Amino acid sequence: MPDTDGVQGHSNIVQRRAVASSAKLDIIYDSIVLSGDVRLRLGGQMNRRRWLIISFIGISMISALLEGLFYWRGMPSAPASSTGASVLSVILIALWIDADSKVRPHVARCFDYGFLVTMFWLPYLPYYLWRTRGTVGLLTYAGFLGLLSMGFLLQLLIYRLFYL
Image (cartoon, rainbow, N blue to C red):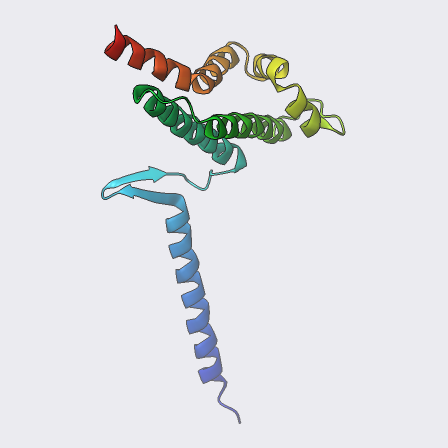
């Protein structure tokens, strides 16, 4: 008679280790340690839309910082970084609209929806935000405009503080 208790015991240990390691991965996924004690609780909700918005905010802030630094030092703005950030911001906005419309069943999507959003994002963004979010959409639109013009606003602040 073969000893099956040893095999079952080994498979139980392997199964417990797999459950423990997946629980550890869930804990790591659910919270990102920012610095020491500060934890950002995600609760498994870090989806594509949030990554696109976080990327858009990061690109806007880095671009504004570079434009402000160039302006403060009296150098002409770096055209490659400004153009690259502008193009990347438009692409991120179009991808966010596309990803957001997929979770909203009342938004009619045609076959080339992503392409059309990329081409006509400027007039479509306020319309989309108004139709999907109402009055809050106008505040969201103001936030998008603020992020897109953050470099100019930082240059205006530097001009006001140092040159007037």
